Image 1 (tube, rainbow, N blue to C red):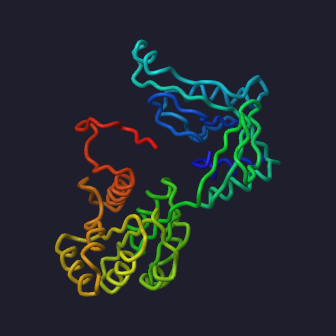
Image 2: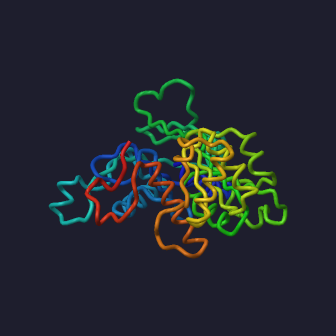
Image 3: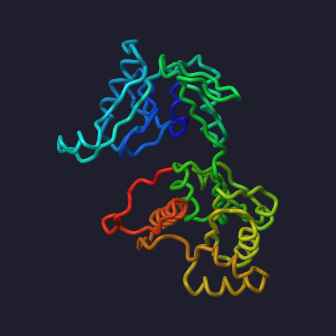
Amino acid sequence: MWEIAHQLEGSLAAGRRVGVVTVAVVHGSAPRTVGSSMAVTDTGEVIGAISGGCVESEAYELARAALSGEVGVASTELGLSDDDALAAGLSCGGHLSVVASVLEPGDHAVREQLRRAAAGRSARLDIDLATGSVGMADAVAAPVGTLRIEREDSPRLIIVGAVDFSAALATAARPLGYRVTVVDARPAFATSARHADAHEVIRAWPGDYLAATSIGPRDVICVLTHEERFDIPALVTALASDAGFVGAMGSRRTDVRRRELLAEAGVGAGDLARLRSPIGLDLGGVTAAETAISIVAQIVADARGREGGHLANRTAAIHARG
């Protein structure tokens, strides 16, 4: 539900009732995880998805039935097992146990949790598997017969440099669930108007900002300024932090010089080995948007412990588990 929190809250704020179908259990090779939701408003607008397209029609009808009060038991199963799908000649298997709920504009406590999630903050709700009712979750374990969906504060993506590439990266990364910050000392460049998809734009020297902010192991730092006066202090601090991913843009020649300067600044070999530079997977991208895709692809691959490359040339499972 958290992946569509912004759209859900927007619909509720507009006075619409919303039927929501949420994944409670994943069986087999279904691609979505527990807590993923698809919603349908009382005007028929569809929000989100709960599979790769295999059960969306079933989920749509279930959400509509919930809105009209035609659902007897809220929990049900959608899709086919792997064996049944193979026998039927379908391209994908797996099935989902789901629960159908209805959100009302007056559900203020639920809406507050949706607002928190949309802002990248921690949130938690309980869904009764028998009735589908959605309510606040307390601090103890979820009661029997309840699906608890919760999320931590979003990991951060700190983009050093307010350039065209950073605006494209903010746009590409925000749907992945990152709270995006762009930091640059140049007022003419560091504007919210140029970075509409960033959660915040900070006007400060990047090295000073990174030194003063909290950075954890789920956080990502991408240095895109391509100016040594910004890059080197920022990377010295970034590589000394707990950030899970630190990358920098530039040519191979720039990378060689940058690593020399970082070593002169006291960055050890172990920390230098953490630097992803030149940043991005080899997609052959040229434009800012293409470059942003190559960067987020590397971030995802790194987080999932993958090297990237063509799925057709791999034999490992496509969907990461756990």
